[in-house]
Length: 158
Ligand SMILES: [Zn+2]
Image 1 (cartoon, rainbow, N blue to C red):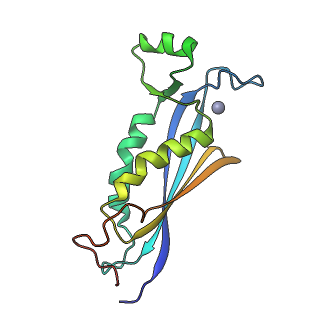
Image 2: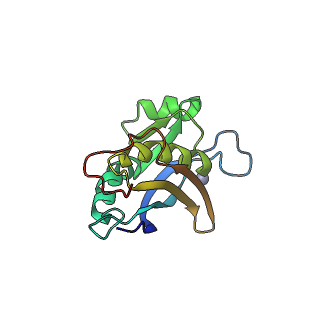
Image 3: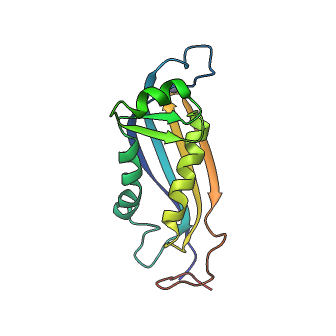
């Protein structure tokens, strides 16, 4: 089989509250965004004719999106919000960073990347997150590092 490198992508959406406590132009206030994430993987087309089955990709990533949907993302450094939210009973995602779209992109890259380990045909992961329709952050990481050379069910061409 010839190597057919191909990129495929899937889009996810969620609503989430946040604030940037040190911001002075509005983002210090409690507010939220309709986030949109495009998860793109590049890899070889397998004997199934697919790089990765979109149903499998959605099954892998949906639980993470469900954690964030209608939650408030709160930095552990944000004492004002943290102290209130800890006892509120509301849905919160506590994180060790301030929830800029750049940091959220890196956070989701770290969460999603290991989930793709069972797919040795994948070479690269790209995550783009839109905080508004006009603004996004994008991060890219290789998927081949630290993987065994050959894995069961691999149809990689040697
Ligand atoms: Zn915001």
